[in-house]
Length: 432
Image 1 (cartoon, one colour):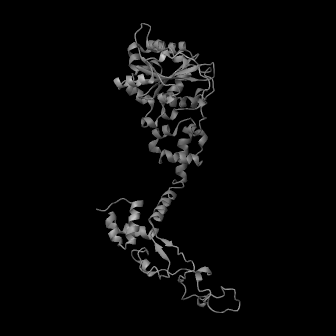
Image 2: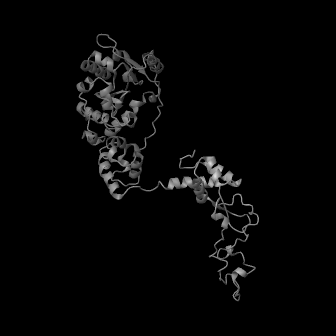
Image 3: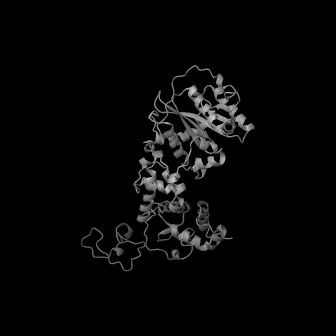
């Protein structure tokens, strides 16, 4: 049965070379590889190469020797003999610019190469052989070079630019744009990045937030002698054991985002299953402010809804979170949730919320104060972030998944609304 795979592998090319050296016919090689004989024939003729002789002075006949009338290639001014008849300069390859080596007639028929030729020792023609490694290198070089350049008409590039550049300048990611305009875009996202990198669009690399390199994080040098009693029974190992007993339970990651030191901060909560994030503006980075946010949530959502939405909370060891009982228990001493802590210097253990903070920094760059914003500004920002399509969600938005996985009263009672795809803005201009 013939193999319809178009491309030969290196292993198959090695078999071709070995078979040619053994004198096998192209048809028998094709049967061995389950290929069509024309495939083998084309492969050999396309990738055969000249084998250089060790003796460079060896005479190889010129293809034009019979009609050649060239004279005076030597330094003798009074010589009128034809150069091809000269005993001193009979090796035309060394001195004649019109030299063309004569080819063997056997190369015009199968197997088209000299791999198993019996006359190689006395042959005066150029030797053409098939080498598997050389053939495979030529194949990969062609495969790479054929994909270089722009495979688009100028009018198609202009059409893509008109669609994509205005959305990028709003702060939208290519993932978000591609998810909502996939039918209008005639190439892959990887190709779009290449077009932007080659400056074919009015949007530039600087308009893509993730093209900006992250600065290396500074490692802390001061250690404080802090009581770790709050972590007893709430470590990351305890968290994993809790999930083993309740694998279907929903997990919420918690963290804070600072503006300027001493100013307002954001308390962020992220639902793992949907990547849906909440953010609340706090006056200070203190335990009391955190407790106030949770009291507000219990009051607005009700105890039953709160328990259903926040059964498990995973956070870091920040001083603002070191009063877990105030978060876990309500005013009536009824247990509302379970708080667990990541290991020290292991932010990857709640990596989803750490990564999601990137979207906040698109709108409020690091170092800018939150003091100038109010609750409505933060709600607007979160609505735009949650309406951004994600690769990790297969092109869906966190808002869309939250409507299926979370209690819908959450959206209504916290004034959370979905933003139309083309109206999403992830730039500082959103809050101006």
